[in-house]
Length: 223
Image (cartoon, rainbow, N blue to C red; front, top):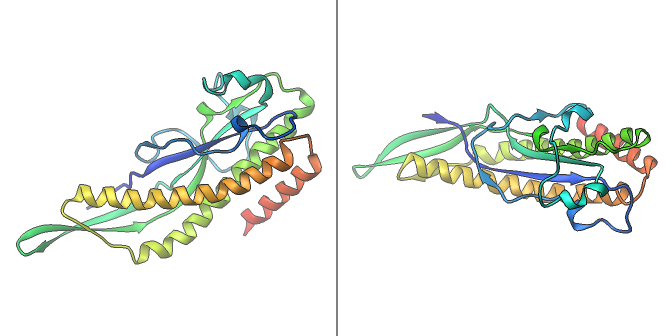
């Protein structure tokens, strides 16, 4: 029996500030509390060059709305399972009682931007638009790099993974839990680099440093 994995979906939001003395809490890259959801329940943009039309939210969330004047853009980005990820559950017998075995046959991850949750400040001056868009592009690239790295690391992991439970539902729940843990760990690690990028480029207008980051992620994606 082949079924889709249903891990908890994790995502973070990122924001660029025009200028401030230090990166405030509301502008830090972060993970939200995950919610249970199947694969691809929400339309998203897989990694590509972004445009301002990809930011379709009419407003910021209630928690961030009070800071709208200080935020140039808000990008909701997540790592999610690739659509061809799948598990296989087979049935056996143990002393006359049914038992179920679960394995992950294929696994992959991808970065996705959620347009309906991503916001673009209509008051951004024309002179800042390219800088802000490049900023969000780099956040997207850093997430894609984390997703690709997680894919590579997970393929070896799943080759030796076998879950044995009393029901197929328990097998699927355990596999989802294990995948969720790996996704969360990967995103926590990525957050460190995301925040370093913001420290370099969000505290003040720094085109040269941001361009260095753009070259860095471009080279990493080529690899």
